Amino acid sequence: MKYKNASDILPESLLKEVQKYAAGETLYFPKDKERKKWGELSGSRRFFEERNEEIRQKYSKKASIERLADEYNLSVETVRKIVFRS
Image (cartoon, rainbow, N blue to C red; front, side):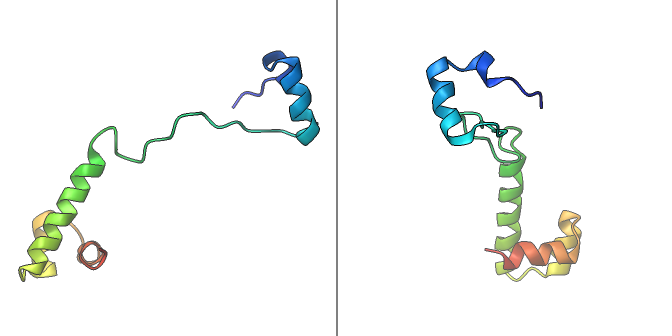
């Protein structure tokens, strides 16, 4: 991240106001817009949510964890985490 001198960017009045609170300090100003969660743009998040819900439904209809792990190419431990996490 490249640092910029606040006096080059901020109006004089705003700079003086900020200096009252944090003179000589390094500040980080986050972007105004909210960050998207992992996989929201690509659709991966929805894909895995739907897959996990499908696994939970099959488990509730008496499919074994081992069979589900084999069917979805997942480890038994991963299927357990999906099934027992609501």
